[in-house]
Length: 342
Image (tube, rainbow, N blue to C red; front, side):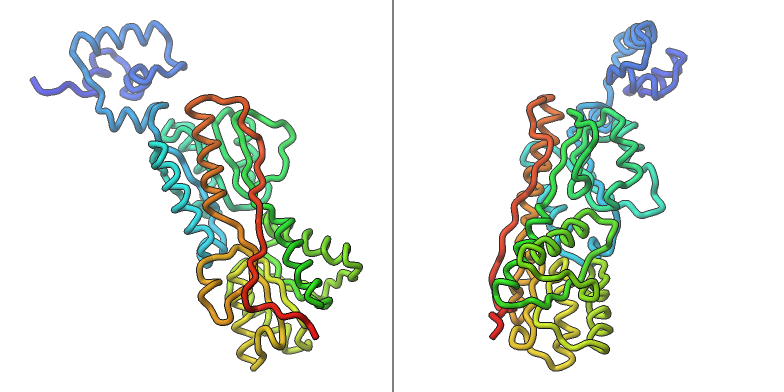
């Protein structure tokens, strides 16, 4: 007789196949009476569950989820590709596999489904709106989650939820203050999608630097962007059609800065002689373009390391002393696109 299957065990026991899986993985929602009966049949017939299937279904799966909400920043920026790779590498070092999903706007409850069916033991979630509806609903559960660049505060801090954010406010403050210290007072700002936490925090940092340096905030110097180089290039083109060139530009991310630089160069202006430019993220291409982009470094490696560390600690040790929120520090990287104003 060949190896008996879960389906055959289920038929003999008069239960569903999923119940057999639940008994094997000791799920709490199955009654003790049913467990006892099914286990007796399993022993009698010498059933051995397939380990791959058992791992996928059970709490010992050693699989982490990485869910990233789809935005222009994901398709157009190297930041997220680096973050994904760094999270996978850190998880593998700790013996975990990462199941990665990009969530589109029409895919509601996707995270919930994977958490509910036991495929993953915990998840890292990044991107999306600051108060993404599905994430808000998940806050009321006991699933282990690390939120990256998502929420600054949660009303009731829970042991199963941790936050890892870049210090977006400080980064934008540093960039703007640096331009001011270099003699620039008319600083154009290309923003990001206004529903993103990072975009909101960077705009606040820009405003704070202006305020502390006694420069009046001017809404006419704020241009709409979506973290993409194409949008920034188009936005910059339209601005220059009707306005003189300002002395400096701060872009919400490096890709936006690169798009704006294309528009500026096409009109014959020189960087930094005619206009100084600074970005945010320090993606690889920023040090390869000419002139090399001055920017704010936000390390995806640090974010990935901290996120995986927190999640694995929650899963492996149920450690109640894990820091609830971590802000990843940023630093100014001086290169060639900013010049002191004469």
